[in-house]
Length: 179
Image 1 (cartoon, rainbow, N blue to C red):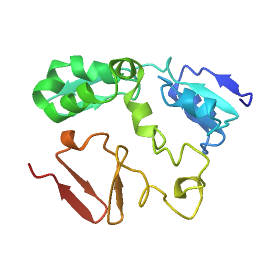
Image 2: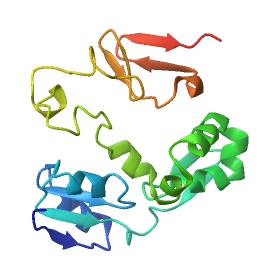
Image 3: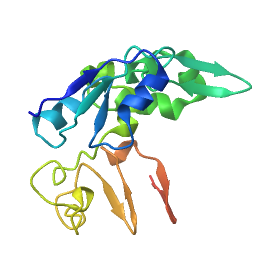
Image 4: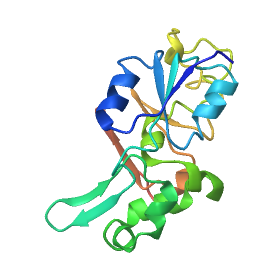
């Protein structure tokens, strides 16, 4: 593993400055469930890792009738399941949070981390020089893709299990699941 600088900012402005403008330069760290594997398998070799855990207010869930639901990037997925307001007013979000990954990953994984997560595709995470790694082809289109994506037209959607997906909207298309 390549040596890297570990930065622990206490303000959002410091974190933004430390992260810079390139994923090759610095990576954010919160739950670490995806980052550790990426580092271990040398899929990423950043110069800096920026720990976001001490940033104030980023681990909060807020709801009001006027502004709706606000979820901080450091909120753990398991926290979504425990919130009555999410269960009552956002049942699809509650269901997704309750069923995604394993309990251990839900307890560590953050909302921000899941949004920033790199592809789980095994072509991407192995030696293939695929489209996501500046190659010319997405091997998942015609190869093994059973559990990691739905490929349809020009859109690529992630869904770990089709039985939990009610529908998708993407660039130029909508997919609705029929029962």
